[in-house]
Length: 420
Image 1 (spheres, rainbow, N blue to C red):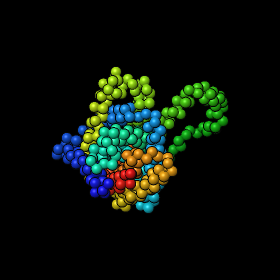
Image 2 (image 1 turned 90 degrees about the horizontal axis):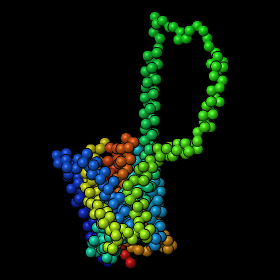
Image 3 (image 1 turned 30 degrees about the horizontal axis):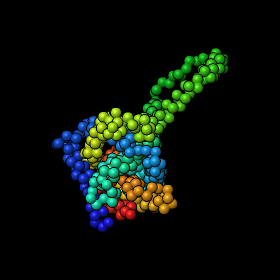
Image 4 (image 1 turned 45 degrees about the vertical axis):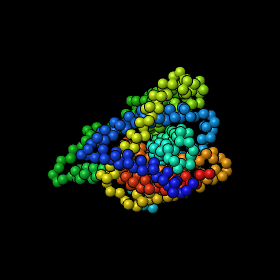
């Protein structure tokens, strides 16, 4: 297939994304205020809790089988490799730019976590519709592509909230500990200055003349240690297990780990892999096919709404605080140049060994997972900890502006690479 046709097929989806993103940014302007901050928050909750889970669940339930699940076994490994390699590149960027300690987790997270859900959810169906697409029938391509994207979105959410969440949490705690030390040092200096004795001050003893020895207090409560140990022994194993899981939930944020998109993916797995449930819900003759049709109807609103929200959120970067240009350049080089090149070596290597299904669309999705912009949920994570919010918005602005060029070029090259 001619390279020009591949370039047109790759650029059209990106142009569609740019047009809808620009519309979202326009609607979010202050003098328009249709997609203001409060509106985006409410619409984002609607997408997060309703549209995306419906889209993921309906597509996985319809097209997932045991055979296809076995064929897709490498995708979780591939996504894990994007996180591992991206983290290593982020560590290099941190040390080369000498980034502040409280921003290190943000930088590593931006290099590690790509937008495995929203962008793929927009690009893959659009690529399948193009005439120059090398992926065969548009309907079959769209159905299989949405299955790959749904699985990618669910796995990416698990990795994001279990790995990037904790990296940002650790780096944000560095800033808070530094602030506490500064406050303590300043308060101790002020306290010592206020306690300096002045001439003429009368000093009185804080205690009365009677001196109490430690033995007087210890002798009165000889039984206290035994009471404490008895209470500890009376704590049941069930209580200890509850305390352990409560601490684990506090550290890893399990509620975010099992986000609605992940829950939708689990439901899609159950429906797709259990024949009795699939017979009830999926197909033109299914007794409860109205549930499937309703889920598809809800899911169709996810793609356009997500794109509008992305455009509105990128306006924050224009109002964000200044950030080292070297940090932005380092993240862009890591995500858009080095990571895709390493991804080509990984995917082609496992394909040469025979570990990956040679399906061109599947290869294309695996390669594209290495060339995506940072995940938008990283901004949500920084908001949770109140660290690096403005810096994150600046990073998102520049990376998503350049993503239009990067995704077009890499998509064209990946299509050429996987075309039989």
